[in-house]
Image (tube, rainbow, N blue to C red; front, side, top):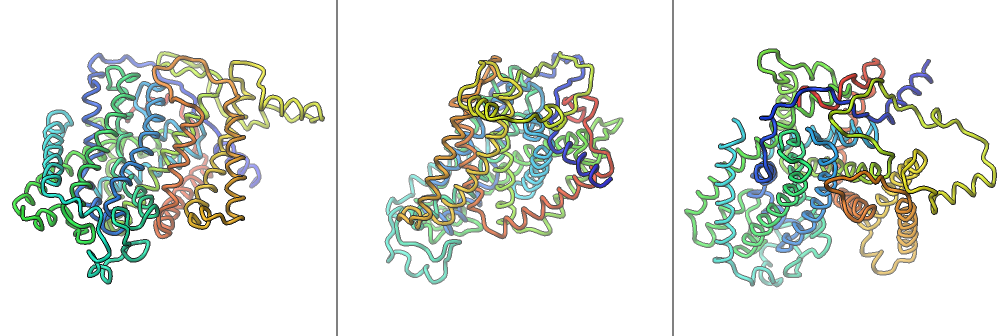
Length: 558
């Protein structure tokens, strides 16, 4: 009996959700958001109060003036992830999320991991960023952007380029008191801790781009989601990069990075340059940033929990909709209680690290989903399509019974890897891509670990590390070519990620590399959080309550 339980549990882990939308009339008023509305929603969700706090901490303790380069690296990672989100947003033209995308393409296990970490992201967003969205959202976002523009212009007026090329004598007095995560303050001017500081700073600066995925949750309300979701996603990331780049440049030009106040960087910077009253303008901007960001993080979290509950990944009681208000009351109360508990247990810096790891993992799974799904046989994503039977994903060994493999069979398998016979994806070619994709993730993780842990030895020519890195690169290149040789699904899409399979793999590599820059303490806390989630998943499976719903992916709580 125990073996049978384990077997059933394994079936559920690899099962993928099938699109079986329920037929429901669509109200003409449901779709009312144009591209500008989605950009406003995305910027409001992303550009929160963290820019008023995190910039000072990263500049002083980690990256110095090179924080502007850290933001560039973080923006590149976000842009690559945004392209992957955009393709999924055009595939599924109703409310979606990274959890939904992972469930469709890579299975229930990774869908739960993604959704569980998205809950973590939304909860921490409430804590660290902490009404209808229409007029109020435009007003508070407008005030926030105006204040940030004032900060940028003021910084360039009162700034001094000498603060970007400090010498050791300029901050000798601060060396004994100021330390960073990488040791004492460096003495290399613009980048005091060189690439280590830039990359570790990028891992934390990625926090400032978290929230653009809120755009895809508005797919059902968009007038033309196939066009507006990709465009608004890219515009949102670009706007946030320009603002963060400008604020960090202004701050480090106004004040030497070693004199930045880590807890109140911008008000203290204006005080040092003699513009004391500007502190009150910064306070107003921070308050508006809190308001707009709370809208972006508070509203998606209960529907996300409700969606996971509908899929059987959490307690189904969380999916109950109140008869009078039409809201998931239990999901709302649970998310609020969880936020309160985490606010009691964690510091701000710990929350930022946790949020960055969880979101980078979710973005990596979305990139993997795009890579895998493009090479699968045609699957209809139309909301009008009906299916009549429940489709259960059986283990592939049951679908394709094993047969004795001869030498000719081995030759045919190798031939199909490099020279596929058809131009249309088949079950076999799809499984080849799945296997190669997961192998690539493993190889990229090992390469990222080598690059992050032993960069100086590697680039100085250490024979062992150089050999390992070269072998990993050769394997990654070979497996990537195998995926590239497989036939892609020819179904037309309004937006397709370019340069497949390279671009999603670069996104995964960059995300994993930023993840390994996090501290060991953050990884321990992240592991505890996922251990709790794994225990919940195991208990729900053992109680035979984990099953695919008979309804569609269009959940009533969305």
